[in-house]
Image (cartoon, rainbow, N blue to C red):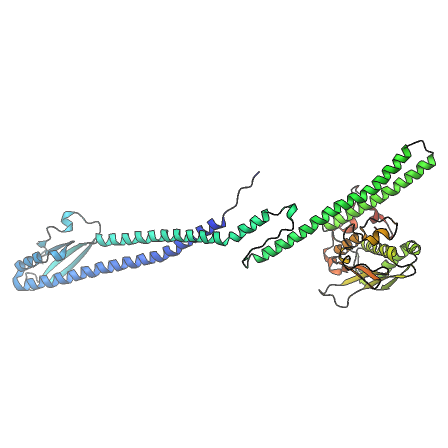
Length: 487
């Protein structure tokens, strides 16, 4: 089922910028509109006050000069000044003296009008004053205010649209590198795992992402190459014992054979099956380690007796190789004893295969005086004299199924090339690593154990000590009460 596309950053950014623009300009223009409205009201008030003052002076002057007749004559002459208003004058007794016949009140009731009542002192008239009422139509000012409001509203919308369009265009330009990276990512395939992301002018915020992605691709490429080599090596390693088994069976079935001869054939077949079982067990162990299994640790104990047990277990192999072994050094650490025995066994068996006859293999246990991160660390190395290993091969010694030409031809013993890979897995499960050095005929291969890993030890049934085979029982090496054999 095709997954629906997510939101667009360009669209969201443009809409948010438009909304922000509308809010900001709306607030500014609203304040501006209120200011304009106040100015219009103030202008209307000043205009009315001016008219009131002019009318007061005109009526008072006319009353003094000629009484009511002069007032009526003066009002007729000032009719043009009172455009848009309705003036009504009443005597002191309330009777009507003058009214604008064509004022707004006579045409229609104005929708927006301001009424002003005032009294004009006129000592020469009966009662001594004239009452005045002036109604001013301010519809024009209201319309002006509405036009301003409409202009400001349209300006807000237009500004928001311009900002939205500009933000969308700019966002599209700024996000173009992401589209380029997406196109480069789509071009990556199993046939092009060496392809890496790159931009001509990467943004500062994108560079860490590009760097991390390229580092990830490097790891993927290495893992893919290792997987391909692993599959080829597994096929090669399994093909040999399977071919031997088929040969034994074919020979046994070619003619009638006595029971003793068939028993010998079955013994040879069993030996081949045991080698296949050992290979499968080692592969399962490495698979569990690759999935993040952690060592299940005991209480801190001395590692020297543990190393001496491994040396004692390999006495027969050492005697056959014509070498002797010696444990040097002492350290205490909480470790998974079965795993450490297994790693030491593989290292010792490997050293015995390639050591000069008559030489001494040293198992060195060393604890650095000061660890770089403050956690207790122990280095265990197996050192032997023999042919110097090419420096270019040292980093690959812990790869699965890796065997240099010397390793393939030095002896006739059956070993499938997973011994040092298991050493590396045991080191990782203890939070440590491996190292290999070879110069002037002395080869030193070992691993480092970290005490801090004890805090994250796996619960029962999940640690390395609980590695199980596909049949449900512990792996054969885990069943051994003593020391597991070398791979």
